[in-house]
Length: 103
Image (tube, rainbow, N blue to C red; front, top):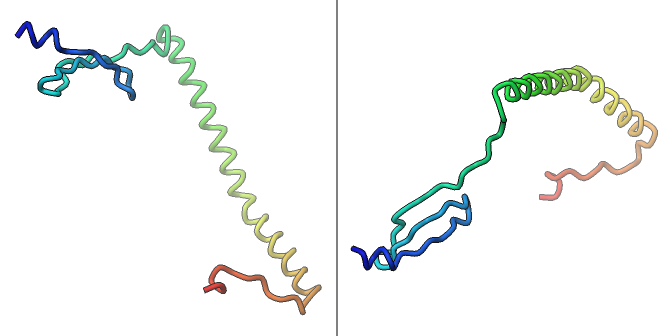
């Protein structure tokens, strides 16, 4: 068994940077040691502050979405009115091609 320990080699995983010990005879991973990740937060207070900030960001994004949804109907009406005005101003213009017309 001592001979097989000398034949093993270490490789770094290209995806997760973990240290893998591989036996060339059996071509199997014998040992896996995950790379240590740095701590995201130093203490619980910093994590709580970030969580409060995330809640405010989500609320702002939601309010923006609600405002866009409320004005969406008005935007569509204005676009329709403008296109209708263009169609009435130039009734002899050819109709625009649609995807279905190309089949």
